[in-house]
Length: 215
Image: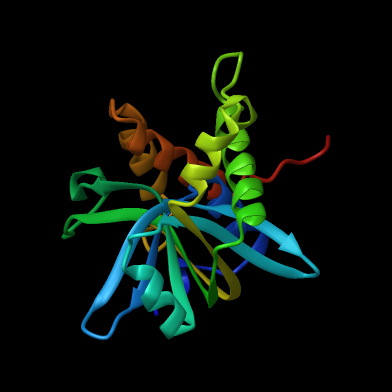
């Protein structure tokens, strides 16, 4: 469970799912017998019969697979943009530094999948999703020798989480006075790193828009 002060809580499912699809390289967490275990993996989002499913794959030797079978439940964490916020950006003090960020936690029952046809289709969909952003011509799994594909698929196991709960924490200076937030956004935009600029975009989208009147 994540600490969720109401001011930072994002509960709209469409916003949370869009965040997962945008930041789909997630952290898969499960509870082992001795300690929690985590794997960093790319996910695909699938909607089926009114259910939200998160699909991924792990290397067959990964010991987390056995833990997933035993645990029955898993947590997937999707971290969005984040950045340091300096108190010098505020209009008044005293104040201390903080960190702004957006993250979504997805909880649900998990199953592992060894079926070769499922794995083949999953890898095809996963590669097509990311190859779509690459210059043409894209890499295509079907162009590989069949024995090689079969061998590679034997080395992985699928993972599917049926999501039962989503938690979103979008800590974007909502607790600061309205006069501070444009200053924070401007300071983030002035930085050279993409992370800060992406955070500024997210903050700007969530700022109340000025009312307009028809004359």
